[in-house]
Length: 252
Ligand SMILES: C[S@@+](CC[C@H](N)C(=O)[O-])C[C@H]1O[C@@H](n2cnc3c(N)ncnc32)[C@H](O)[C@@H]1O
Image (cartoon, rainbow, N blue to C red):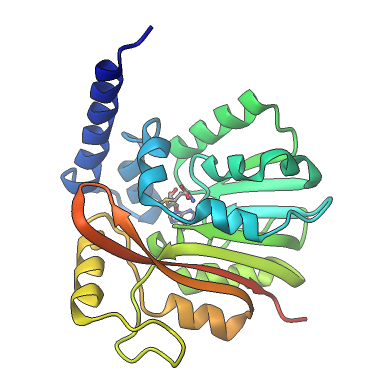
C-alpha cells in the first residue's frame, strides 16, 4: 500500500523533472524535428500528468466534435495520444484515427497506449503536420491540441489541414494565444502585459502564442464554435493564461 506522502513526493519529483525541461534545459537540434525530439525525449513518460494541469480545454474540444461513424480523424501534433482517452467508447465508431507527431519518443508512449487499449483502428504517424497527407484520402476531422503554437509554419499546417479535409469536414483547435492589440469587435482584447508576458514566457520552450491564429481560423473556416478563456498555470501564482477553443467547418 502506498503512503500519501510518498505519492506526493513522487509526483513532485516528476513535476521537478518536467519543470527542468520546461525552464532550464536548453533545446538543441539542427532542424524543427530534431528540436522537438530533443525537447520531449527526456519528459515523454511524465508528459501526460503535468500537461493535464497545464493544457486545459482538451476534453471540451473532443466533446464538441461527435466522431463520424466510419470516418477518419487525424490529431496533428498528437504526442502521447493522451487525447484518445477523451473519445471514450466512441473511438470504436471511427474507421481510422491517426496520431501524427514529429517526436519519436512521444509516439512511443502513444504506441504503448494503443496496444494496451487494443485499439485496432488507431495508427501513429511520425511526420510533419505542415506536409503530411494521409494515404487513405480526405479526412472527416482534423484536430490540433496545443500543437499549432509549437509549429513555426502554423499557417502551412492549417493550409495542409484544409487540403486534407473533405468538404464540410471539421477542424478543432485548442491552444494558447494572445489577442491583437486592436482585436475585431466581439473578440477579447488583452492588455499590454498579457500580450507581452505570455509570448516571451512561452518562447523559452519554443511555444509561440500568436495573435494571428484566431483571425486565420475565422477567415478560412465556417465557425461552429468559438470560445476564449483563461487558465491557471501550475507553479505561477495568480497567473491566467489565455486559451481558446475553435471548431470550424471546411466550406463546400
Ligand atoms: C504541447 S505538445 C501537445 C501534444 C498533444 N496534442 C496534447 O494535447 O497533449 C505539442 C506537440 O506538437 C508536436 N509538433 C510540433 N511541431 C510539429 C510538426 N511540425 N508536425 C507534427 N507535430 C509537431 C510536438 O512534437 C508535440 O508533441
